[in-house]
Length: 467
Image (tube, rainbow, N blue to C red; front, side):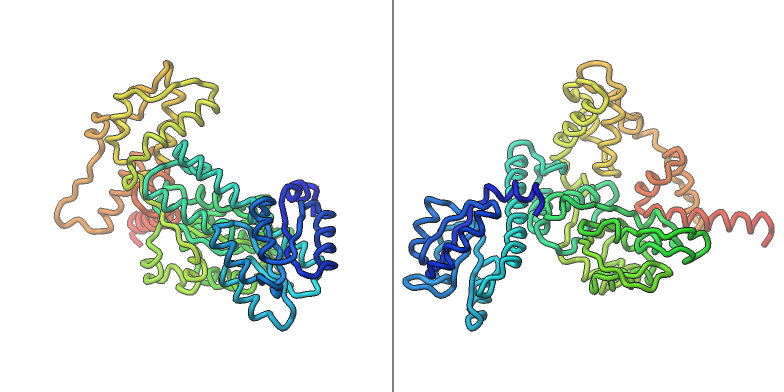
């Protein structure tokens, strides 16, 4: 273990429950040399007394003992609502009983004689899990006291459901699939899962599959060898290599080509991959979190997302609510962003005036939380007094601005293609050619918007040349 690991395990209390004196003393001394606070008991009944006074975080117990065996001890601990992690020590002939103990709630089991290296690795994993659980408890208090969960803000029932799934998913290595409209905070959720996981000390690598051309996406994800394609002047690591031992976040995963989806599925199943143009298989230890702003069921039906890949990614599913579905969180979000931009810009704005808050509450927020963040950032910069006033908000949020919004009027006989062209053009004018914002308003991905614009430009050139 590293120095940091030894410091973290120094406070962990471990109780050894073993009826053989030599084994009991040997394990206690071994754990103490590793930095644990270790004590012992000769059977289950003595262990129960020790639990109330010694209060161990980990219990390592023999399975076969007089008076009270390991399985009975485990059940008694669970009845007492003890949250101690229990490891069962078992002889070869009682492995089936040890497996039964895991079903009851044991963390794992080891066969006797105990292999010190395996025991140490197992204890390291348990310590990581305990640290994660403690951090989750801290976040729960933070949520109760301040209405937030790490960097996620909200106290609504919809967000509490999100926090609950994050708590369940974070300590595991299972894949997570996040769905939600643009601006709801999918990457922030992925970061929170990573930060609460045992992988938190390792890289978090994010890639937006819609923002990268199809011809380069596979190289970005898997890397490439020198000479793999025109322009590949040197070997390059892909996202999987960069995220080794950490977390890879694939945003807009449904924008991947079917061929790339097949390769991704293989990596998830085999835990190996091959660089583009390479022959050697690379081993990788990466947790994958994927996201899409599409309805995944519809994406599967339309052939945009492979069904087998979806089920492989959707071990834990997190559906993010729109801001319209959790409007009661708006004041918390506004205050959180105000605090952030006060610190960032060296300002000391106390809050939002009643009139300005009324404007914010009446807005539809089609851009969700991201739009709130942008509005508050702008208002914080513009505000010159103690409070943000309506004049500091974008014109589109005021009632006058809302009535001045452009409207698309279509006459009978207008083709669908022409209507789409005019809608896209009007939206781009509204966003001052901000294509990312326009895609959000239109409810499509940035990649889809670029494809539509390219198609419209091609059609216009054909009409001009008479082709």
